[in-house]
Each structure stands twice: as structure tokens, then as C-alpha cells.
Length: 506
Image (cartoon, rainbow, N blue to C red; front, top):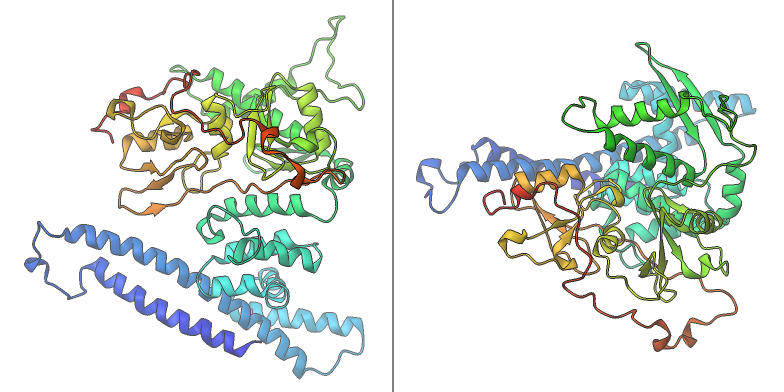
């Protein structure tokens, strides 16, 4: 156990507690700095100050929880190490196993948790203290939560030490080459951090994604698990393109059923639609029921899905993964099949072979397209509200500054919030700000706090061995650096809440 690290973490905890105490006093109105009766109402808002103190206290409490979790890990690892040093060397594997069980039971008793929970803690402690010290230091300083640290352990599992260290540095070391663009890991909710870490792991895994996909595709299966209250779970493990197509097709069908007379939620409708498809017998050419699929043949999905394909990978010159919207990296062979067989429903996105930036969407020319809605899909990747995972094809096009207030229809004044957060923007003081042609908007909360945008993690694609990027002539990528005009021909979809775009609502 690193005693110095434990002391530094404890000192950080003490400082957090002191700061937190100040926020609590301020939130309760007992800080005693200035009596409320003596405060000039025109100069300050005592209630707003106390509300801000509550939010500041929550932020500080989050950092305190991260430091406490890091200290728990260090102490658990320290006890395990010291117990091993104090014990007589095991004379047999059985004795060693019994000693591990004893350590786990001791930690479980000290924390009043189950032995299973204690075992998981000791396993994480072993990984963090011996293999991922940079990750452990981050929650110890309050920079990321312990959930982020657990995700880092999950996503670096089964990687070679060098590959795991590179992944760790990519997200936590600001001085590392190719450091993750967009938000720092600690500024992403754990789910969004897992998605980014997994996507990066897939792209840089030492084993080709083609080989891993072929191996895992043999394990595809349908599972059934009974549950309480007359319910059950039905789940499928299948190739990502099929799963995404099924999900988006079911969502589109469910949305088509919504209306004033429909009381079911979108989630309920999606489930009912899928169940109806599976339980309704398909009619063959002779009119007989036929619910089977020809062996080895699964139709290409027809739902609308966004697929980002490196241009050399599309041509079969490299094996670099493509990106399936809402899922992450997929094998290039799957992307090539989607482009070839699902062209009417899958939007192909080609990326620049020099830096990975998007070039064109579903067009035959090598130019940035004029379809702003498609550009927003690509620029934002998802709903831009902090922590929201809603897929890009599922969202609304919206003016950041309302048209009625003088906002233009340029890409820098457009966002694509999901229906939920579109409604939030128009009915509360939450507002998106700071969008550019290439960067999605961040958000300002009603209390004035700023939440930065999460940008795409584009990176330079792989080049075929017989091509040299240094020989690429600037004129060979005509239109790559052209600015996107402020006003374009293609109209935006209708705003589903046009009456809310007013100065009063804003």
C-alpha cells in the first residue's frame, strides 16, 4: 500500500469536508457573514445564493465521494497485501484459496456487505493499485467518479498492458498524444464515458474487429428468462446491424401509432409492435403460415441508420472499423454490406483520409453536402443535452436562437435535441449555446451553470500500405475546406413546438 497516497487522499477529503461545511451553512442561511436583514435586495438575492450553495455543495459532495471511494480501494488493497505478508506461505493451492476466502470475509465484515461485494471490491482494488494507478489517482483527486474508474477497469480488461495503458492515457492524461477531444472523462456521465471508451477500444484493439466479430457471431442466441408478476424477459444476442435495424424499425412503427386516442407509451408500443411481428405467422406464396428464415440468410435491415465509413475501408483497402450510430464500431465488412444492400435506408458517411473529418453523406460527389439536417446528425452524433444518449436520427432540428427572435437558419444556429430536451428548452430557462459549424452546442442551466458540449472523437484513419498521405495534393479533395453557407436550399423539418419559440418562453 502506498502510504503517501493514502495520506494525500485523506488530506483531500479533509479539505472537501471543510469546503462542504461552508456550502451547507450557506444553504441553510447560517453562514453569519452578513445578516439577511442587512442585504440590499437590489444587489443580491439571498434565496438564489442559498440555492447556488446547495448546487455547489452537491458538486463538492461528488468529489468527496470519489475521494472516499479511492481511499476505500487503497485500504482494501493494503489490508490484502499486509495479510499476505503476515501469513505463513501457503503449502497448497487449497490453503491459498482458503486464505483468500478469509480475507474476503474479513473485508465483508468490516464494511457490513456481502462476501460477493467484498470480493468485487478486492478485485477492483487489485487492478487499480497494480495496473491502473493513473485511474486510481483521478478519483483520489476528485477528478472522476469511482463509476468512471470501474468502467476503465472493464474496458481495459483482457487488453495487453501496453494497449490498456494507452487507452487509459487517452482519456485521463491531457499531455498524451491524441488525447480525447471534447469533454474530459470526468465531465461525461458514466454511460457516455463507457460509450466513448468502448468505441476507442474497438478501434485500437490489437486483434482485428473482423476476427473478433466472426468469433462472437457464432455465439448469437435468443434467451428467455421468467420474471415476477407474470412477466418474462426475451433478449437476443445478434450482429449489431441487425439489432440496430430491428430497434429503429420498431421505434418508427411505434411512433406511427401514437396519437390523441393512443394511451400506450412509446416504450409499450415498441414492445407490442415487436411482439406482433414475432407472433403473427408470415404468409408464404401458397398462403400457408411460414415463420422461418432461410438457413444462413438474414435480410439486410431496412430501418434508417447512420453508418460512418472511412473511405479506404469502404473500398476494401483497409480493415478499419466503421461506426454504426447508436452502437459504435462495427466490422468494415458489415459496413460494406449495409452500403451495398441497404442503400435506400442506410446513410453512408465518408470521412477524410487525412484527418477523419466527415466529407459527405449519402452523395456521389466528394463534397460536404448542403443538407443541414444530415450535417447535424453527423456533427452532434446524438442529443446534445448533457448525458443524453438519444440517437441522432431520432431527434429534432431546432433553432438555438428562435427564428422569431432573429435567429438564422445557419448550421451554427442549429441543434438536434431529442423530443424530451427540445420540450425542456422551450418550457424552461435551459438554453443551448456556442454551436459552430463543426462543434455541437453546450448548455446553460437556469442557475447559470455551463455544461460544455461533448464533441466527436474523430481521429486520423488508417492508410493502405501502398499509399502515402504526404503525397495527397490539396486540390485532390476539392471542396473539403469549403465553408458551409449560412442559408441552404434544403428546408428544415417542421418544428413540432412552433408556438414555444417566443421570447416569453425563452
